[in-house]
Image (cartoon, rainbow, N blue to C red; front, side, top):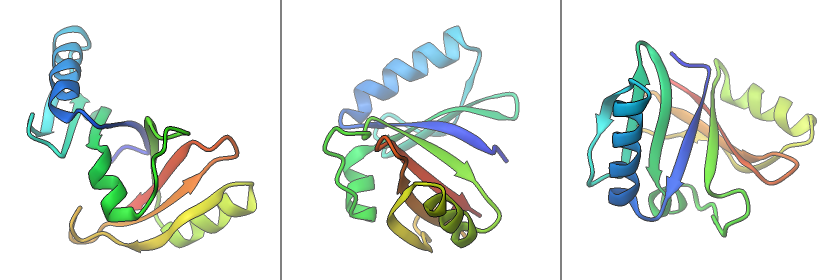
Length: 130
């Protein structure tokens, strides 16, 4: 499992999918692992490592309640951790701001837990465990 990978948040999923699918598969040698043009999620890997994930912005806003008003809302770093609660506490103690506390996300996977934070510059970070 990847420790850290970028996730692009998009309001135009089909267009972004076609762009990244062409760029990543033809140029970067990645392969589409999950998802399709109709969204709301897709990810590409090269060998066993994630290259990029694409997520529909409105779906993330709806599920998490996070407003993606343009400040730090175009990309999101996703960090896979063993303990979401501990990681969120450490991130907050180190200057991050928890915007969605740790919780289960069964719609993303039967054992998925996430928390969402903003770093000191307002960039969105997701902590996740499976």
